[in-house]
Length: 225
Length: 145
Image (cartoon, rainbow over all chains, first blue to last red; front, side, top):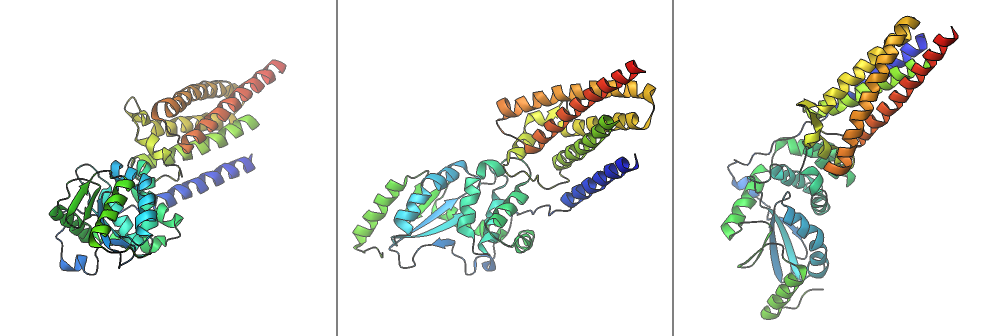
């Protein structure tokens, strides 16, 4: 009988300990939207850049991590765009946040999570992961821990990421990207800005390729391969 | 006796599991260790509440009651065991029915699976089986006496 109560007590102690440990886990971060953008917020940052600096065409993607159309575009079109335009040297791709706070309550947190992942050189795989798992983290109330798990799954340093998240140091930069997009004529996501051309919506990769090829041909520039 | 001990251990595991889900639900735990994301989907669904009460809290109360009944059966004579075993059998049968409905809701209405909820379903099923075996064993012992 004594053994039974010892085992039962042991399970209770271990169980309560695990629950206590779970309760002590990082609780999350608040990324404010109503920030005043300062020059320091954008110093040295011109978006998340992928591709050759000498690429003849630059495309700026303005997107919202919680926007379903952005998620669909990233899953379906982005792999082709990346392979056919960015990796071939035709396009220098710039990703910028354009959070839609009224519709997406976790979008700023996701943008900041990606910014903190970028500190560890993991923006692009992290971005793909955020979009791939968008349907999961968009619901519920554990976005912070899910975003943290995505980083650790990519081999990131969770402690460094936690510190970055709790500082909310990129809140101003995210807002600066949103303001820039609005100035350029962005009104929805995703929107692609190519020079003076503003291309909103779920643009197919084929259409984007034809557009880029026509721009390159018009400029008489040979793509760097 | 061994069935009541097993029932007590299973009930305690159930209390801890349900408490984990309830602490998440009230925001005391930042996130569920789930892996699939289905846990959050299920917890955020309308089926996570029953008659205005969190299902996880009903689980905590139900498993705690089963634990108390099992411990009464462990620590007392045959006379008290009779009613505690009977109540445990009734409680766990109700629990299995309630869990069956919740599992159906996951499969057919929410279209997401919560591993912790499936764990609880396994526990209550085993608990019910244990209660039934204990009840049967007590009946045999009483008849033999």
